Length: 285
Image 1 (tube, rainbow, N blue to C red):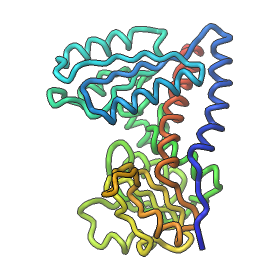
Image 2 (cartoon, rainbow, N blue to C red):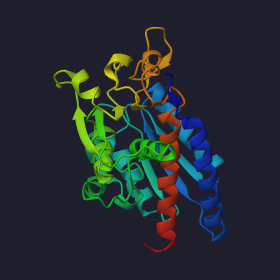
Image 3 (cartoon, rainbow, N blue to C red):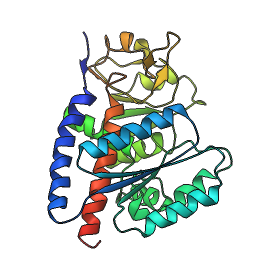
Image 4 (cartoon, rainbow, N blue to C red):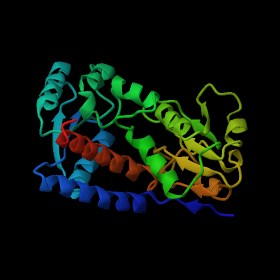
C-alpha cells in the first residue's frame, strides 16, 4: 500500500482563489485588506518567510507593509511601531516574525498587538477565546491542518488523534481544534515514554516537534492519516519533515509531503485571517 498525498500546494491555490474574490469584494467597497509584517534581526529563514508572506499578499490583491529592523534594534522602537499600526484603521493584521533577537521579551511584544489585529492568533485574549471554543483567529498552521483534513473528508468525531509536539504555535492550539471536533486527543512531547506506543494507536497523527524524520513507518498505524508539520534540513542538506516520508507512505492511508504540504497552507490561512479582520472592520465590529 502507498499512501495518498494531501497536496498542500493545490489546496492552497484553490483557497487563495476564494480569498482573492473576497479581497476584491472588499476593494469594491473601498477597503483594501492590509497586513503589516515586522522583522527584527538577520535570521535568514525568517527573511524568506517574510518575503513569501508579502508576495502572497500582493497576489491575493491585498496590501502589505514590511518593517525590517537591525538585530540590535531597541524593543521600544518596535513596540512604538506596533502601537502606531494598532491605531491605523487601514491596517487590518499585524504579524511579528519570530524568533526575535535576544533583547526582546517575545511575550510582551505579542501582547502589544491589538487582539483584533492579531492574525497569528498568539495574543492571550485570542488564545483564551480558542480555549473556550469561540476563536477570533485560529493560529495559521493548525488552521491549515484542519483545512487539509476537511478537504479529504477525514472523520474526526471519536477518532484517536496523537499530536507529537506541545508548542503554543502548533501543538496546543491543534489539540483544542481537534477536541472541538470531538476527537480523542493525546499530546506527546520530549518527555513522553514509549512514543511509538502512542503513535501506533493514532487514526490521525500530527508531527510537530522539529526533529528530522523522527516518525518512522513502524511507528504508524496502517491506514492512518499523517500530517507532517515539521520543516528541517536533513543530513543530506535537503528539506524534510518530522516524518520519514519514504517509510511512512508505505503504511499510512493519507500523508502530507515536505515541502509542499502544510507549509503553503500556513501562509494561506494567514491571508484568510487578515481578510477576515478586514471584513469585520468593514462591518464595524
